[in-house]
Every structure is written in structure tokens, then in C-alpha cells.
Length: 76
Picture (cartoon, rainbow, N blue to C red):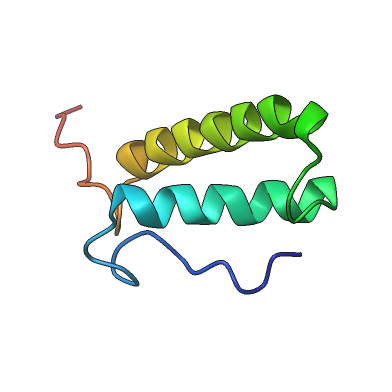
């Protein structure tokens, strides 16, 4: 599914723009809805879905830890 959506996390893409995130979200919504361009009566739902997926993507990218997290240094 959506094989042409590029990976947006480091180290694959060091600089991710808002346009990159929105484009990936739009492509995902197009794929799952089956609409390249929705009919006018579906446009609001389509755009709301794009915005929601973009928001979730921003949160995911912000929360990911790239590489291994530092080991805990607590003494026993």
C-alpha cells in the first residue's frame, strides 16, 4: 500500500518540510479513499482527513527516537 510515499524520518530524509508531510498525508488519504479528487460533497471530509493524517505524522516524527536511546545509568 502506498509504496511511493517516501520515508520522512532521519536518516532517510534529514529535512522534512510541511509540504512533504502534507503531500504524504494527501497521498495516503487518496489511496484509502479511492478518490484522486473527491466530489464537491466529499471535499470537506477529504481535506479534514488530510489534515488529521498530517497532524498525526508531525506528532509521530516529533516523538520518534532515531537510533538507540541512551542506556539508563542508575546504580543498583
